[in-house]
Image 1: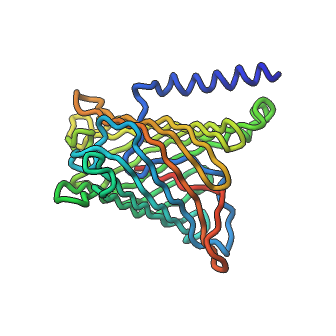
Image 2: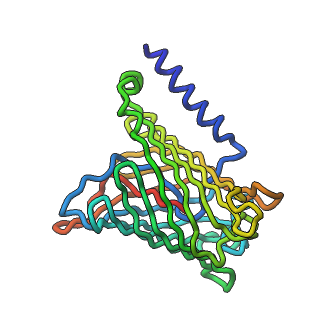
Image 3: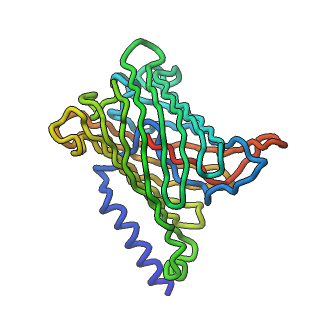
Length: 302
């Protein structure tokens, strides 16, 4: 039985690699989807603010730009994510604040600031989001990319809800979601990595493969954009995807991520990097100071 479980699990891992080959690995630069550290957080009247702090070093970066105008190369990334429930799971508010540094300019001084503000919620297996994002340079004047969008996703029951999965893989789990979105306001958010076109629609997919008790997690993401000026506005113009491996313990996470963003409908700039990042989750309650948690983080989608 152990041999069968190992063989089946190894087959699943190879399946992830075949679906997302190495040369196509990528992740969104802005608002990266992150694997949840646990099951969805329990509703409590005492909880009023939760989030995470994240810092990452781009250990290999031949082409991932440090500003919206595609100048420089990212060296470091720092982020804070905050979210609060407005009405149970049906309506929440969150914000992401991302800053990047330019490795060509000493690694430390900040070169870009990305701000995200959004309302989101879930109804049974369906999720929705209404978001505004603004990406701007910090150390010089230049292009500012901004848009507002809406996104709807569907998340089927996770694999542990299946009796045969629990029997075969008692320590593992698999969760997925997919959806589509519309950038209904977009003056400057581009449809390709080389800053051509303007994005109109997006298609997303995400999967977490829990390898061991939610302490070792393999995650993959795919993100497509379309160009509103193209003859076929439904045809993808850019593909961003990711494969990452995360290790967690008591609200802390260290993850190795490889990213590649590429055009699909023409030859052009491909941006890619590998990063090592650390994430720490926390929450504030009405009656206590911040405490460390290992409960659900939010998936912020570009």
